[in-house]
Image (cartoon, rainbow, N blue to C red; front, side, top):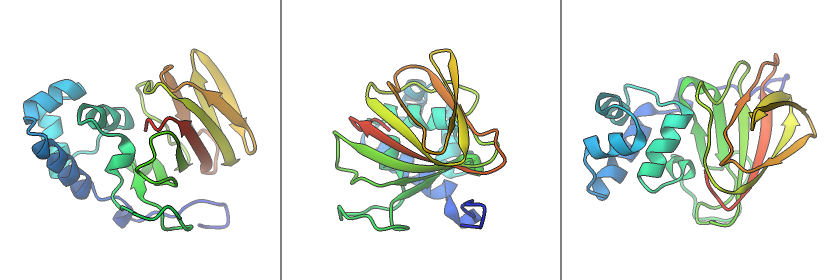
Length: 195
């Protein structure tokens, strides 16, 4: 982390090939054809094939649909795994989303189904993408630890700053973007785990 609070990333932080290989393993284990998974995730067969080969980066919305079609949460796609309920700083399973806009750490055990806590760093100019997100239902709170972020939910936009907390149902269409000049650190807490 630099003096401005930014998490410095390297190309090694996200491995599209590892993500794609994991998605392919999950698909094969469930004996789902590429065509069927693509249809259920509302993506093209060629795009899904590229994701599995690690040559294309899915948007957050596409990744959510792929995970859902596989009966998984995005949390299950985190590369690192832990069997320990104590998660020390820097040791949480991480997911750096394609395009490096989001860097997330799963702070609760993957096995938890009633509670999920994720620490996210949203890069300058980063967002949830062009599509509105909608998943859940759940009770979710997002607490801004540092920086600021714009959240549009149910047609209303809120500017959140450090210390602010917004609680919402993530099944309501929403989007998140960082128009500030520093990364935003957000703590998401959801019950039940939906991400």
